[in-house]
Length: 284
Image 1 (spheres, rainbow, N blue to C red):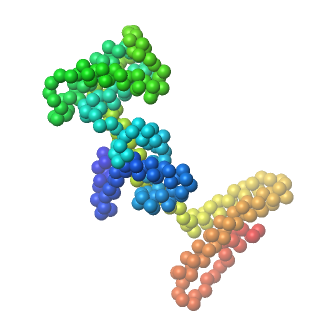
Image 2 (cartoon, rainbow, N blue to C red):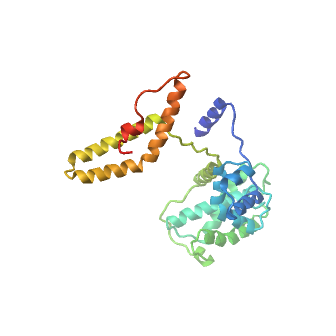
Image 3 (tube, helix red, strand yellow):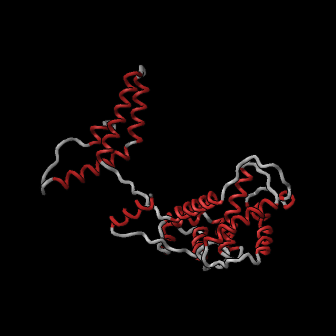
């Protein structure tokens, strides 16, 4: 639903934002420039990107550097190894399933993990037309999956060894189905895409009407304190301190008020009335 709203909004505005694929090489260049002290605005201008996109790259610095060290081709735009699509997706789903089991304190063994991997492999194989419709060579796939299980556990910081996977106990929690795992993977991708979306920050500016309301509220608050304070000298000191602290805003308000008044009068016209500084802040 949110995607439909976004599309309609883009059509109304007359243009749609085009997402830009950023290679690891460019991301590393951006990170190095920021670490060397170059300002975010200058880097964003050089690479023709929003500052929010530069911020997202910097936030994901650890992940980017880790994959660069793993000898991933620098010109690639995605952080993944060039492997069979079914195997790649199966391992992603298997990792989610393992993490869910560990969080639920569900004991696992190597046989259970192999069975789950096989189940996921069968389901995912049907979703890809380009995959060979036979089961030849899956023993090799199983060995590859088993060899990656320890690595997955280390990445999840679970402090597990191969012997831990061989232990089997009765399961007390319901495991995720393959459909649920696919849905979780879909949600993960949506979150990653949302992080890359460009976000334009609204610019702040002073409005004379709101500033006048703020000054009025300050004076009303001071009046309430004055009505309850028997120590007149104390209230006078507090009031003076508040007015002095807000003097910078008073100057801004007065300048904006004069600019608005002059632009609304005919040439040679004169303004009447006292300034906001004298009215609201007689102590200045």
